[in-house]
Image (cartoon, rainbow, N blue to C red; front, side):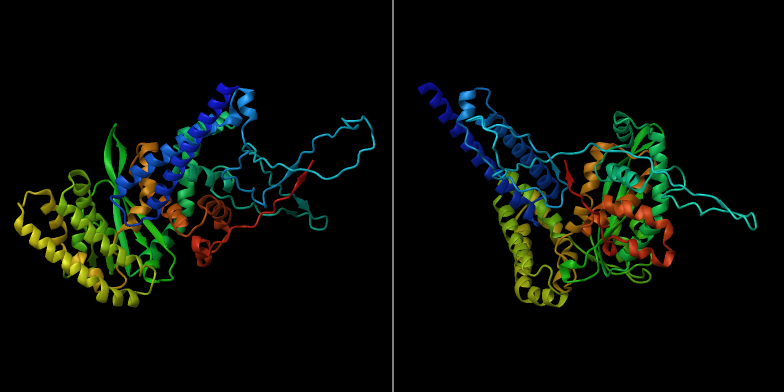
Length: 508
């Protein structure tokens, strides 16, 4: 027994070490998720994904090696009962009561005079496989015995003109494609495994019909976004299939988010697609609009700020996260003292900004003038002095000149409380696209890119307003053809309320 006891002690020590490592990883991941002003967003996302994968693997190993899962009964018998991290199941879930048959005689004395003392309930979470049903809409015909006319109720509207797909099925297909990044051919295969024959062509037809049906809402989101005084702008690559080869298209996004300066307008994002990255595209997208554009240093936005533009030149504001990124990479890779010092000074500005995020534009401006202007002035003076003493080819010099060449756009936030320090809102809105690229590989055509832009406008806007895109799209598809145009705005995510569904208790 001594050997078994030693093995159990060693196993418990190993499990304790694994639990400590898991707790440490969870702490790091939580900090990274909360850190809105961290390092490069691309690098940060990769690191976060790696840490989450490591955490998943550690927790799986911990469960596999736990004493209660051991094959040796002696080890299993010594396992302490653990409810680590277990939370009670939601109260509104349907319950199915399964009562284990009780003995009719006492197992101790054999007597049959048993009376119920109480009961112990153990709840287990289970899933019911996806169910399909055919809904028969019956329109009865009646004939009048007096005039012999025939009467029948009118046919109901369907979510889409072609096909007889229900709204929940359509919203599932749309969200699987654009939110879960599951291409239609894979969806078709999944349906086939469940006994439902829906080929890729049929699904594609439905997606196209849904895009057309939802176009009025996409137009309303565009109008809402372009009514903003300040926009975040960014773009990302989209591989597009063209004549047997793949070309690199672009998805552009324009985000309205007034919350950082205390605005009450709901957030929204409008996506556009283009075959290339020419500067004419943002000029076309924002034709007739004027205000503040926050973006990276892409030269394509410069035309918007040129004197003489009608109705007025836009005001350009820089992204400090982009500027910090270059210095941070050098500090991390080369441990260059000047790069490390530059990052420290920039982080002090970010820290001061955190305290005023979400307050009114007037309050933000007042705090910036008193607390942040000195930090920025000192930073730029210090950078200029450093660049005078270093070679122009030095990577640190080049990273600092990213700021110095654009000092007017980087310091504009100091004179306007509406301007944010970063363009993170636009980058966050593009994350789903970046994830999707790896799954659906490419858009099938330019029209496919345009459809993706329209659907991302709807789905990402729903997410920005803390609305479940699948439930929202299902409800919208069920109602949109019955609502007159003047009331279509009632279907927008920030006006929408989830329909109430009763959860009935099932008793066995």
